[in-house]
Length: 136
Image (cartoon, rainbow, N blue to C red; front, side, top):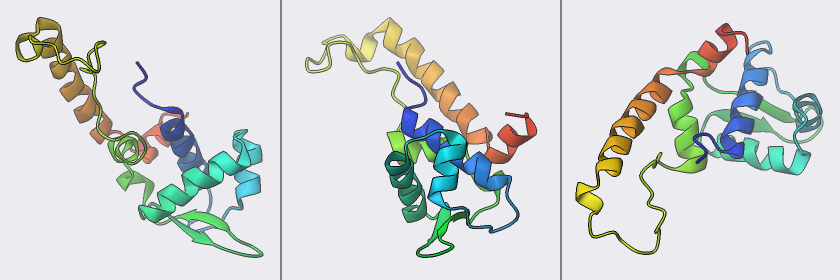
């Protein structure tokens, strides 16, 4: 079970890097890819997704790249997870294709739903600015 996928992790790392730059400074993808040690095509795809969702702006051509469009205090991890992973689901049964007849009364599922709710709430309180303040 991965709470944070690779795409979400790479997005967080890229946003933290961009948040450290002067306001609205455009950073080229090759610089980001080399600095963060993320394959350039993979990172470009992630950055384009963030741009489509209004988290980043992009500029093409010479001097092109990506920059933040939002204050890092407003970029929540829950929003990033939703963009790249969809909703958090810790209750996916190991019998994925077969619906368990005890699904609604499963004691493990009921406990996992509580944990899932807690995790979702906590992720909604963590921002890129928080992570920068934590020194990561």
